[in-house]
Length: 87
View 1 (cartoon, helix red, strand yellow):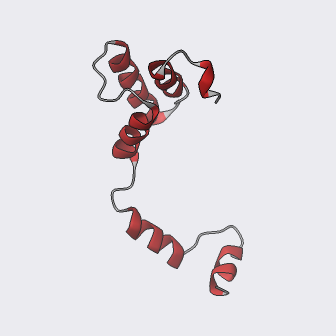
View 2: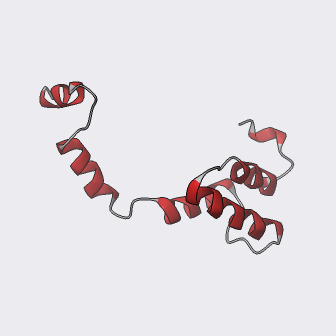
């Protein structure tokens, strides 16, 4: 995305929200779009959008998740497990 083609931060946020399709993310994006358009949004920058998205959809215990994924890698043919055991 070329960020310099947008008139202001609000247009960047609206564009990013317009790219979210499918599932609960689409519902969330629609609600946030309505908030931005009605000037009631809790964020006004792309960074604010990212923080809001992470707060809504992020893993609240990401450190534990990463540790679990490193201990039990999932792969189609086990190559990840082999690579992990060689570390």
